[in-house]
Amino acid sequence: MNYQQQTLAGMNPVELVVALYDGMTRFLHRAIAAIERDDAAERRVAIGRVLQILMHLQSRLRMDVGGNSARALSEFYASIFALCLEGSRLKSVSRLREAIGCIRDVREAWSVAARDPEVLRMLGETQAPPAQVIAAAQFPSEPSGSRWTA
Image (cartoon, rainbow, N blue to C red):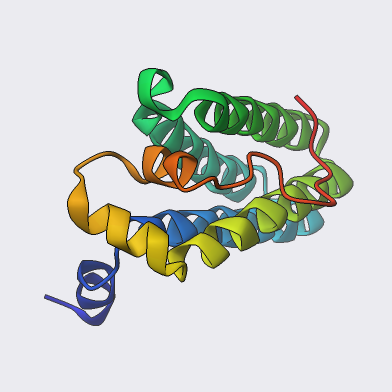
């Protein structure tokens, strides 16, 4: 097992979600660098990785359990997906930076939740996906100052 695998193995489910958000940000920065170098192949690969993460996160949502929080996250993921597609198609650094800003806003809320003792207690008691645990812990569906719209 390598260092990265060991690190991931020691994370709780909410910390893993934060890591996925960090991955999206990292790949969006790669896409921006590729646009600036006029490297279409690398831009497509980087955007493809972001879209894969978004689809994974979207597929893990359970609307029947998560209620409004799950719906808000679903709309958020769809908005970021659209921003990334548009940013890639138009080779728009500003669109990709907008996506990064939105991801960072929501990532911060996940990061706070990952340190919340009530969330950690609930994670230990259930097998529900993290979004449903967060929803049950009264996680805000939209961080204050959020820039994304569905």
